[in-house]
Amino acid sequence: EGFAASIVARRLEDGRERWRFRLGAAVLGGFAADEERVYAGSRAGEVVAVGLEDGEEAWRFRAGGRVETAPAAAEGLVVAVAENYRTGEASVVALEAESGRRAWAFSAPGPDVGASSPAIGRGTVFVGLGDGRVRALDLRTGQERWAAPVLATSLGARAFTPELVPAVPGDLVVADVAHVYRLDAATGEERWSFRISELLFRGGPAVSDGAVLVGDDGGGLSAISLEEGVRVWRADLGPAPLGALAVAADRVFAAGLGRGGRVVALETDDRGALSREASDSELSVGRALLNFIAAAAAVGAVVLVLFRLVLRVRPREPAEAEP
Image (cartoon, rainbow, N blue to C red; front, side, top):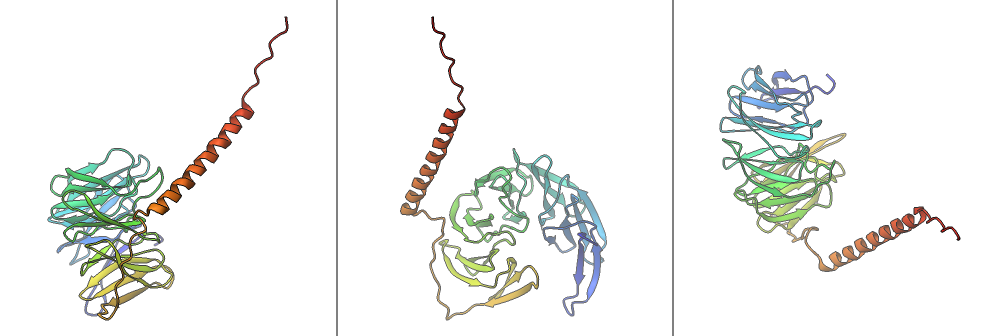
């Protein structure tokens, strides 16, 4: 069916297919589910609800923009992000899970496409928008509680990807395309940030046993101390990018993407030694001074070149006529 996606339900006992629902459009993000329905957003700009028991469509909502991120469902509401690439506007929309009717919508000022998937916790919707800010919205009203800048973006740069889903294990853990952050869920205040050397495009952070786990596009799985923000171990799982992570009991499951994709399971090793690796984003005075000198030299060189060009193209003053 080309790029058209389907939702497939399988029996846990033997993996046999129970039902299949064809969405008729591409799906870039994942799905959300509650006890009665499963919800998906599509590039066609729709949020679709499908019954868990029978696989029949319950309702369909036209969101007014591409829904490329996974929706989130909790407390009788489904929250999705619709992005209009013609206007540059991203809208966070809350729908009633039972009927699909819109409960509220939120849009930030200015262009902000390039959003993360939303996450729900503590009566709040958390989402990163393309302006490089993470926002906390009241789940019932959509009113903005706070907005915290985490990434300085330029026009056309993407701050987040649809696969980056925030985690809410008390505080908020969120990743942009290069960093992992722990933010105070009530205020948005940054507790720490950690810069990953490889890019983070394929999967959001997971939290387990006091550590933030995140997979990168270089095939590395990092564990960052939730309390201190230092990396305590890193496992190289191969050259393929790592996607979604799942945590169960004392094991972590990581999905390797690309050709020949696989799922890798890691378990706790009580004999293993932990490290204390600081983030690349921590300030080094010597490095900062060298960066400043290099930047100043580069700016000075550009200014000198422009000055010389101006002198070359400046028109000559006409000679005064002799009396």
